Image 1 (cartoon, each protein chain N blue to C red):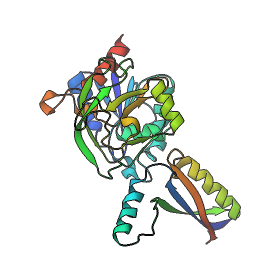
Image 2: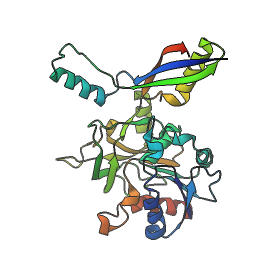
Image 3: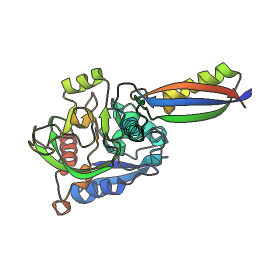
Image 4: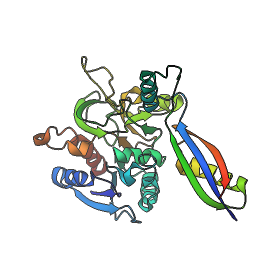
Length: 85
Length: 230
């Protein structure tokens, strides 16, 4: 067993109204960042865990995402990074 | 009839529900702690409003794993009534007892107001004391009430008459759909396919006395009573 740090991005499902993202987009436009097309506001989680190897850590985190960390009705998730601790 | 009212850490409408059952309806009620493993003979379970587990992760996401929820889901699977109000609606969705999910209000503002809604289906065990199309006024108080489901689910619950309450009448025509939170089709409350689980964002337990502005919520409790008594 080794210890891993798994980073997960959870974002609102594409196509769903994302009022937070829209508010941030508008604010960026107000600040002059006119090239910004869209912003999505989600969550970033870091899971520290013990696993046999990197792929086991990733697999397990994926399972956590479908069961609790993300709600598949409204959110998409992405394993952003798996690093050894 | 005995109502079991679940208290999660962060629930804050459990006492209002208790008051509605005991003082307004004149029935029996008991609090069920979220770590309990039995419903103590409750005929009806109420998942009350509040901010269970601080709304951490997503509203209702963690509460659904409380020990009592295993019993609540079994109770619902037996066809017995479960009423999820506000945070209770969110919990019921997260637990898969109802389809869809509740997202942050489109306005990004917490909305606290007496709101009009229309009874879209008066043939459920939660609404048989109302008339179809009846307009009722009940308070809402939530930041995450934007009902959302995929197109197929939405079409199904609409087609099956499972949209029980719909927000109506902003400015202008009272019959216009109007959503205070951006919910799809102005949905305020839905039932599951079997019709024994109701989730609604408005608070019927806060509308049980004219002195406090409205008694329009009594119909929900009286409907449950008349159905089981019948």
